[in-house]
Picture 1 (tube, one colour):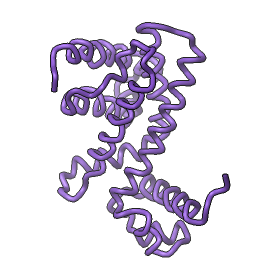
Picture 2 (cartoon, helix red, strand yellow):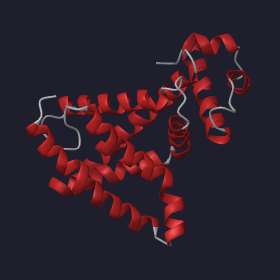
Picture 3 (cartoon, rainbow, N blue to C red):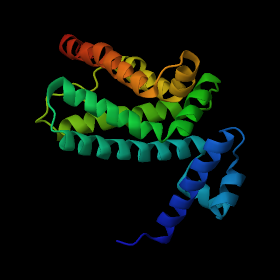
Picture 4 (cartoon, rainbow, N blue to C red):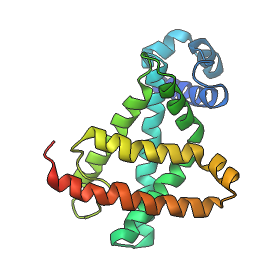
Length: 210
């Protein structure tokens, strides 16, 4: 179905916000600049989004949708099972997230500034964890622990969501400083991620009722 005028305006706003946030950062990007870049009236932005945090959350929804689709395709194409399929899924997620590195950097920077008004990182975490729950519910035939029902938001946020985001944001600088190949760093991260978060997940899910 063809997009309506409202849907087209919303997409223009999102594309403009993605570009401006990535190039100039969150603070330096005003709603006025987004409106100018998108070539829409400022009131149109507030019609679709409450504030800039709402814009980032909407952008992150697109990230999640792309990651989910790419991960599913990667697993089908690889025809792997068990831990190999888990590694393939994590690798696919990292590849997709890397495309959004600048936006992820903005999310982390805003959270580190400690602004009480900025809830973008936490809203995005909620979106990611909700997607994990939905994936588990719609994919009962898999035994992969990567997408269990979320028993404890603290566990998921600090042992899964944040480490993966931090690796994406810091990988290039880390590899440059330590003279490490990016592919080797990615392989090492996946191994560590499986060894820590995903294996701990099995035990956590069976020992807590939170």
